[in-house]
Image 1: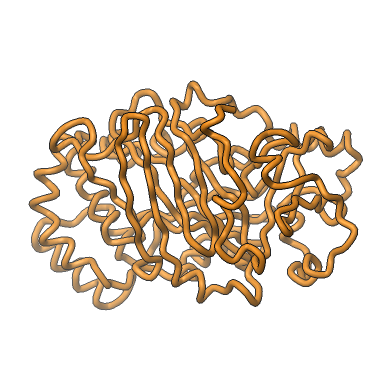
Image 2: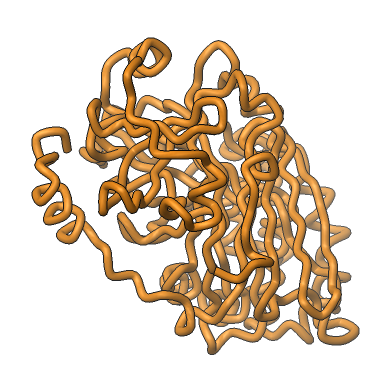
Length: 389
């Protein structure tokens, strides 16, 4: 790990970390494997005595009470010792859960998806199209509740103007776009490299709030995520969504899951403001902040469209709620908009969920994903923990 990539606990934890119930995963050198953990007073406490996987842990009845009352948990070390690599590594705070995402849930990003579609993935054409569409679509979309009667009227109006798009259909129509972002066990965690496919010349981070669901659909908490996206690839065709979204190290979640309890509720989540900061080795800087309140569908509605009688997730699921950011700040030249460069430091943060930090690399230069479900089963069997999985 490069010295400039070493993080410190105080820089990634929520402002009220002393009150927050934070759970996650680490690779512990002492255990020779992944461990579900709880953070308490800056210490990483091993939860394998309760459950050997995060999926099993989150299924526990009265989980908040169980964790608040837990005693005698094995102390694996300080969080700083994992961030530095001394005692292990901080992992994404999920394991067997399905990794799903909702697309086109905020007005600004909705507009940018239409622009991508019109530009056919060419960033040089995007600026002119943005100038043409923004005054019309921007005013029409802001404040709309997806699936509402007013949204249906706007849909008819835009169709009459010849401005309708498949992105507007899922953005303001009755059915949300829900897709598979990545495979179980494939997400990277805070402090890791995130990957950009080498074919892409127009791409961006997608800072998002991530809901955490049990198998029965109960929303138990939230985390932060980076739904790394290739704008030029998806812009060429929406049917290339899988290639644009699911690549080596292209999904980041963390730093921890904050469970809902007396200190953090769904109402608190609705009010969070998510901040983005990109700092490049070339001196480029981009910042922004947007409110969750601007979302066009409620988190509960999106969760119900994910998990219902027609579709179940027996190991639980996480759901990216969509990005509220559409970075357009020019980087490589006038009119070319934003794209990543190798070495970019990406920070996604909110006071209630902490700060997710990653560095950008090519996906073929990031460490290969080799520890999947079968590797996890073998590891847990070797540690005598299968009965707690």
